[in-house]
Amino acid sequence: MFPAADFAPGTRLCLRAGFFFPLIVAAMLLPAAAQAQITYIGTAANQNLGSLAIGATSAASTFSFSVAAGTTLGSIGVLTQGAPNLDFTNSTGSTCTAETYGSTTTCTVKVTFKPRFAGERYGAVVFFSEANNTATVLGSVLIYGIGAGAEVVFSPGPVSTLGGGF
Image (cartoon, rainbow, N blue to C red; front, side, top):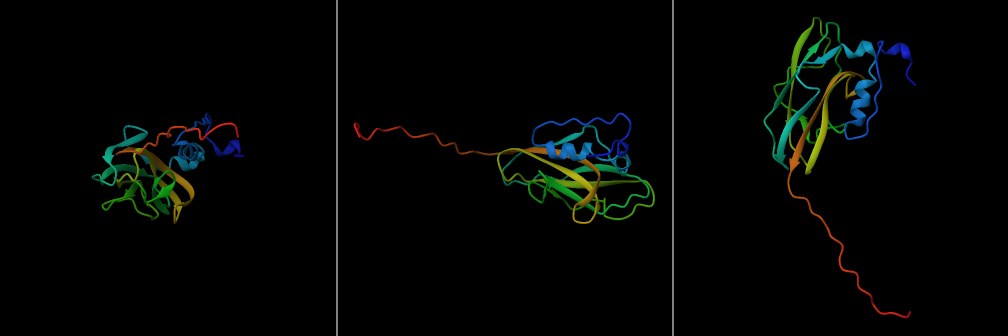
């Protein structure tokens, strides 16, 4: 369990089923001190990277973040349903880096989308306090896109009777 003292007054826990569920829980369970360290500077909590043909690569989308002074950033994960380097990847030109920030800084993470399968694809840009996407989550933004392409559907064949009276 999480001690109530770890959360800011008025913090609510809302559990919801769906693809974002593990990411939503991770973001909502951050201690109050960790929530303010890295903040997404954007207009929406979830960022849509659009619809793209399976296997095609999008142009890089830029996400801006504010990093508080004194924050030690261990790693940045661009994740697809919790796993790195699948449909969403960190692109060249990102300015957020793993370091200790001496002053409040604005930096960017550039993300490309290359859907591997048809349908909705969910992920996140997540900032961790340790290397290799481990330890405390310092900040995040949810991302999603749609893989466009054909899907194969198998229909059941006809049912045949091979005789009777057995």
